[in-house]
Image (tube, rainbow, N blue to C red; front, side, top):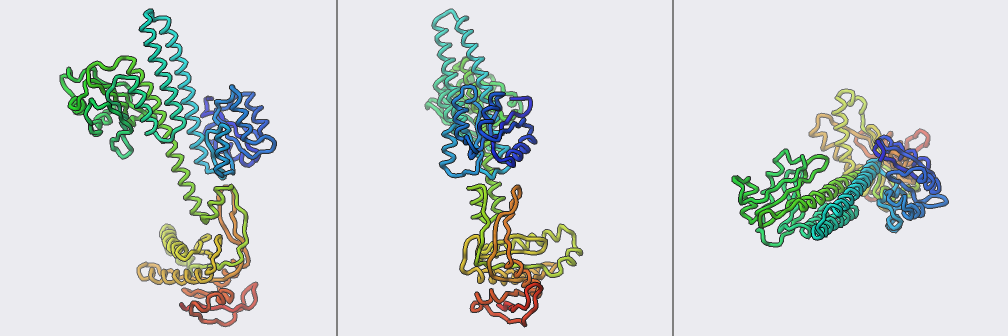
Length: 537
């Protein structure tokens, strides 16, 4: 990698996507190169190899799948990880991406934090792979030196056998690290391999959680050593020197003049020699690889080296699992945030296709409400108090709307706008909105009995057609438009404090379901004379 965080090639035929991704990644310290089609991406690879490629699928000429296949067919470029980033969210699209050689798949519209975490994960894996390959080269050199230096055939053959087994174990574990999402899976594979390569009767991977609890990530025993409580290992993590990564152990517990509480428990279980390799993530101890034998001096220098090498793979697995869990949490948080600002069906559509189309909804009912005297009341109290009051009231209104199958669209200052009949049709749209409006008034009355501020509200209701859709690119807002919204606003303006004022259109829908007081015909600005009704219950 470069002296920066790494070099990333972004391939997308949409300029806005190139600019946005470039900005996100440049601010993270990465060197960013761009290409607006597949051919230029391949040309860019001829100049110098990036550390990672973000690749769109739907592009003119050569699509992303073909670009990826060509890269993987070239020995020079096949090891560069490719992350597909596309609005195509179907399972078959993702399977095609992985079949072409991609290592990950990000669905547009992407969340900035998700892109950052996934790029970070795969660059970390790329870096770890390079280091592991460098270490393998070094080990190969050691192997050659051993062949030259060891004169005795038996010793040479044994050294080669052990070395080959270590390399095989490293490769297998490294592939497991790349393929798995669980550190438990890697730990079980590591335990199985290390018991084949060392004379231990029991091997265990011990972890300490963020809550301080000690747990066994994986363990395997041949039965000669009696079961041991995982809590005996706590003293390991109370030892601040564990962060030095140094291998610890004892050749013979029997000969020790004094034993620690852990050593005493091991001895009582039948352990006579053991080695312990700390597992570090970002320099902090998170666990240990523990190998135990039921006879003294069981472990040679080669065995210790094998344990240390396997510990490196375990550390990689734990680090990857933590990054993956972080990415999952970020994705979940992004989904929750999206549901907070968009109706569920609209949010699902946006996640699946990357876009939404404005729709006309012919039969909806709109509730428009406004707090009476808000400006005067807010001037008499601290802003924090006013915001807290609004939050409590609007949260209660949201619950009322949800219980009546209505959808809150937005709040603007002290105004609250909700609809029923969209994005899913509802033949009871007028009834549900009027019922919600009544419950809002009842809530304010009950709240006024226990609050120092007796908030009051005017509510207007009208039925008709609206247009609904998502507004914005970086910050999504779902909004509704049309004359029905304006008329509902007029109904609110001509309502009275703590009353629900409905239009003649809405009245026709629910006249047999509620009690009403017909009002005199009122001349409404921009609408002419309109008939209105107060809801009495």
